[in-house]
Length: 229
Length: 327
Image 1 (cartoon, rainbow over the protein chains, first blue to last red):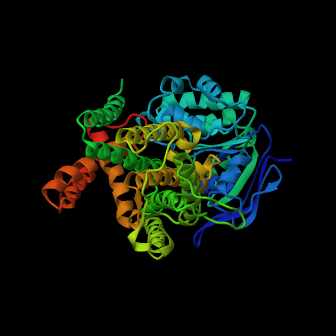
Image 2: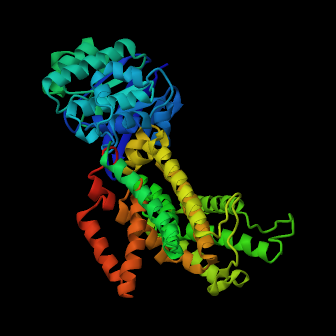
Image 3: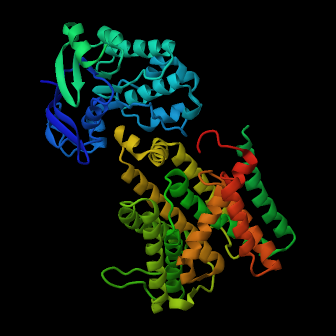
């Protein structure tokens, strides 16, 4: 049984339809790459999964449970962890405070996060707003890990970061895949990095899931047509 | 050591020093003023938990202040007239014991805050301000029209209530008691602010949606904070009523809510010792400027404008600079 399954999902912002008949599924321990050009519905799909936006049509099942009408805090408690686009830490809390504010029991604790991102341990008393972009991203990932999710959704986790910092984030994601014991959904534009990490992929185009399969089967013909690369 | 820690210690030392000087100089009026500072500071610390940590701009905290006052007034008036508070279904007598009165005040304040909060927190922004104000005014008009406990004239208590081991009629001993309660409340709020609950509350103030995304419910966080805040403010109301040996509907008035908010803003919103500094400055201004002109509130208004426009961290922020850990 899939850990997360979206079938025939449609979603709207007011009267405007943003998602049309989206399908995707993630198994336990699987890494799924959600791809698409800008404005194709990736972040909207994330919002539907994390229940920040409720789908009008179709079904979202998490661990077999229908998430219809479920508020976002329940989804988070059920095991959905989100690293939102734009990092979005609590700016006026310190690194340590950001991490413990959302902590839930499980293997991911302060020590495990500090082991993954030693920079955070060095900056534990520093306010989040004073961190660099890369450190804020690490904090956002660390904060999501502290909730001990079963599925971690990383929305554009490397966007706007310096190449060296991006490599650090990709290395951390690879380590999560190896040791994290959780499923991952990674949204990113770097096809090369995604090919190295993901097991499967879903491509969104104009709010529809137009391709899904093992990432190794992703041909240049498909990427040319739907991703413009 | 951080500048703010030194300033906080200096504030506490100053309160004690002024009280001790007044005691040795036989100036009971000054001791009463410093006691008032400690009591108003407790009310401000209560509001600061909701306002500073939770961002809840409540104009109804006078309701809790008044409930604390009336809890004291009602229990003490029954004790001094030797009439029971109720006879059926249980016999409930009045009391002159401060610990019992405080417990009743805290419970009544918390329960009222829970009910008011549960309804008010469904709204935000200006609607939250107006609903809390409306609840405060409801209590005000109820107290005015309640002749059994003095109505508009209020309720005098002839002898200050007692505390085991202390002569509360002695101004310096009553100051010591109020000061100790203030320190205990400061310690409690400091612990709350540093706890995961306090941090989540602070996060909910900064972005409620983000807090939900990590599995927390902003409404519940705000409601718990509002309830604790109401309980603390009610305790200060009980102490204030005992200081004056009098309780009146004025304790419920919107001006009282405004004054509690002024203590917080003057001292520094979200700063632990902000209400202590704010209450001290307010009482000092009331005493000094009030002696010069009966329109001293004009100067207070001007000062408030200056603080809001140029010193957002209040007195504490002005002296100790921007806060390290919280905004």
